[in-house]
Amino acid sequence: MGDLHVMRDDLRPPNPPPTRHLISIGDLSRDDVERLLGTARTFERSMEREMKKLPTLRGRLVINVFYESSTRTSSSFELAAKRLSADVMSVKSSGSSVDKGESLKDTALTLNAYDPDVIVIRHPHIGAPNLVARVTGAHVVNAGLEVNGHGVKLSVKSSDFKGRSSIAMPVAVASSGSRSSSSS
Image 1 (cartoon, rainbow, N blue to C red):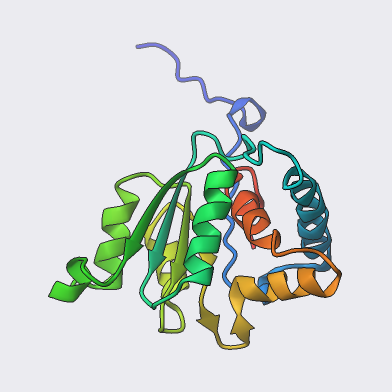
Image 2: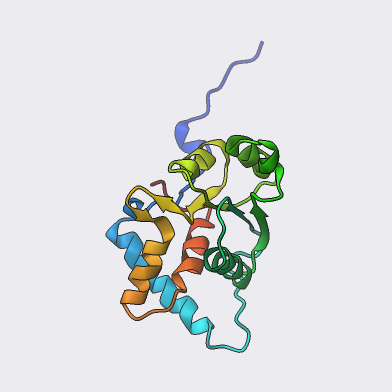
């Protein structure tokens, strides 16, 4: 029999970084907010160009899942992802298997089979984005209510307050879409 050789830890490949989610504005540090606003300024300049599409999320899949009626929020997230060149799939609970009693967990597991990079969710129940984050491998962005406010919309309001447009929504999607983000 041959000798067993153990690989040194410094020769092993590094563990992949943990998946980062944007569930609540409270999850963001001051540095995170400043980075988001700085990125928003960069994206905002691209809106002045004739060709507004950027390659930031090319090859990434963003799934928008809306369990509540929404026009502005759902269309903002869809347009943001498309402007960043993501492949986009939008799911509304009305007319889906949810009408037949499918649970949020089962829906999330089904969507996870598509290997999404980002799942944007708006759901009437507090904790729903956390459940999706637990059962999928995607970055999860909360587009709905949480205990202390309106998750991602708070960053948009913060951006508007500083004189910037609602470009913070695509920034949130782009920031969540990076697999090299750290955990929060």
